[in-house]
Image (cartoon, rainbow, N blue to C red; front, top):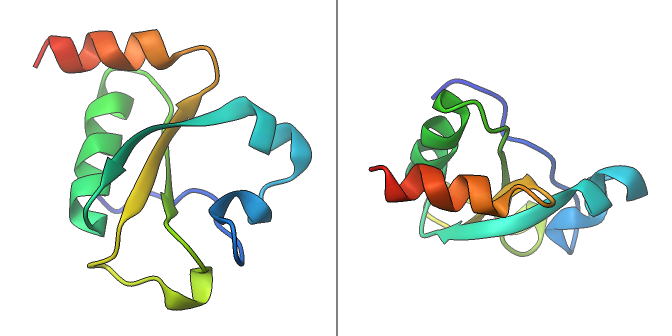
Length: 87
């Protein structure tokens, strides 16, 4: 689980992304905490699908117990769904 935490910025979690990155990633799942988000990310990346974790809300207010977004590349949501179907 020691991989990168993905992109995040102030206010809207997608604010830290440059425009090209923001258009490339879509929210796939919400996780109730950081550990759950990292587990989803590991499952997806273990099957070869890149994933990013973004905290909900303002970056200054995030905590390990706060909600996180799990994002996948735009247009690859069907691949993520298929990975979860195999579990």
